[in-house]
Image (cartoon, rainbow, N blue to C red; front, side):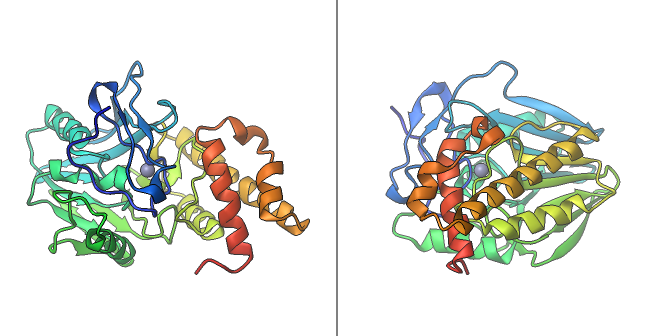
Length: 325
Ligand SMILES: [Zn+2]
């Protein structure tokens, strides 16, 4: 058993699929007790992965298997090649995995990576950021900046792990970037999976990178989310009728109009999960009773259902009881 040489210490805020892929198929277990349920990672080879998906002539999705559920789903980034350099959205869990992203980009273009948008502040999307060039400009929401700085100040933060540089550009609401003739809108549609979620919209290509607001065919992971707020944020993205392609940070990256249906299905899954739990709450079931009695129906077979289902019940109960800020 070998741990990655350097990865961001993942604190209790990690709610997502929380995977730490390790080359060679070995297993990595996070040592932080609060996060131990999230990051027992297994890197499982899967035919066709890692894979590159061309979303537009100069826009790509890249995915690799970094899963805690026996390789059941992928982690992905998007990158945009411009005449002046490359914009990347998010990263992977550890430097080796993000190095793969960098290598893949340089198979496509010799242009330097200049801009990285932190859509998700969770460790499985930032832990490998040291593999990006040291002089890239990061874009981050104020909420994620705060989250990352708290982690960095924690005694559990692993020395040598990536830190958000002071030069990071804070995007509280929306920022339009013109990069080598390409327009990219970095936007905060509202709190989603992490609370500080940023999206990136490419108006010319009509592509919206959702980061972890969209976990394609992965059970809604709510540890750091306010459930109904996440749904409201996702619906704002769905209401953007110009969008042709929705790109998730976990699960398959697909192209074109089918991605709208995929994202609609995901939003419905979140609504169904919340309604299911609310029904149990309304019946007066205790949290323990709800945890035992829940039946997720069609979502029971979604990756992460067993673990994240239990967390979802707790979070929905907390929200209904007014215990979430
Ligand atoms: Zn994640």
